Image 1 (cartoon, rainbow, N blue to C red):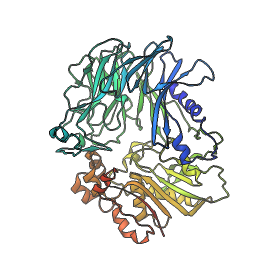
Image 2 (tube, rainbow, N blue to C red):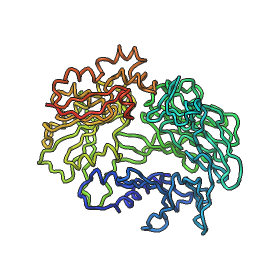
Image 3 (cartoon, rainbow, N blue to C red):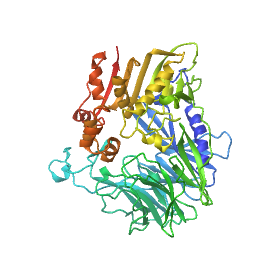
Image 4 (tube, rainbow, N blue to C red):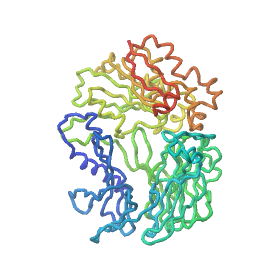
Length: 591
């Protein structure tokens, strides 16, 4: 897997560089047309790499995903398209692989000529995992268990009315439709039954809305699976997911993490079968707690935290082939780095260092200059920010500035290349971008991360203003042409800055930003989030968090200065437009 991580950037560059090169800088059209590579899978013998490429069709507003194969034994080899589909997986031999298509599971042998084998899977495939030995495979599929309005009114088959008597009614952008994601097992190379391991249960694996195949794992002997599920009475109020094991033939489900109230995720069996590594959060109800590294000893049932004193969150855990070490990634000081720890004497050891130099993969494109900066912040301490300068930057000139306000509210500003909030695209228009790792963002210790909860309009906003002031003092910034931009909590930040930023900003852009805290609480499905962030249920919100942290209060005070006022929508109006509840989108120019 580590080899695949090193190969993917060069593979991306090779694939994207073939695009037309008439534009000298990145444009929205070029950004939207970029091919998107992902899902790298290295063959067991290390000789081939499978990956997917998603090709957009901008004019039709669609995209198509296909599987590609790269021969790593030949220098300069070009990737070869395998066919339409997704989720490629290798069999143990390294000579055969499968991938998911509309027709079902397709199998190909690199050493044999002839047509692919196609295994139809009734009802479709979600997350896909091949069992060790290649005789079976596991997958997820939605199973309908709840009665909906159309079921109760057979004479109205086209009815689209919805009726609910419990939360969650809608999770992020998906209505609850009466289905649950279940885990199935089916033979791969022979006939046999498909077994629903969660038959009849109103439980999801992986966890919606963002969980994937990383939340499920096969044991090395192929006899059992470990998966993540939240079997609680009120999932809208709890982050108490647990790790469960079940025989691949079906039967009893055993909870490995009972009594651990936070998220328990991403099980990883050791190659020797003795251990299951997993990630866990300590505090129930807090979705952004420190992610701890645990191992479960299968023989004794003991769960042990390996790095209790490590002040970072562990992701993407991978075992070494000898089961003696664990590798993992950590958001670390504005970038993502690889760490490792020995199992016998645990210690977090940093494997990679530094920051990658990032350039869009377009021939002859003039790239923005993106550098890590330490900017003086509130209380006279240095503050981390990514400073992105326009192509052809000249320090003797003066440039307009965008203060980028990150969402989350707990999500680090790192070295990602986004197709939405793209710093290269912003800089290509001639702006200097200051992307601030303000209070509440991971990568700088859990205490720093915790400081935003129940203080949305407090220290995090002062961090943004401190960096804005420091940047405006630089000779190459035209302080009269400064804008604040952001989405979600970043949009909240923009609304808050409208009422509290003084005369710093000439333009404010808020996308789906939280404007009214009471409205947000009453329209939010994940009650654990608002309960934690605002210090309790609705009455406590009104008492503790309003009016000090509500953008609607300072905005009312400042509305006379808006040259182009906006009208935040009610939750019902947002729902009618398909937007997130209690959010408003606005562009305002200040006099």
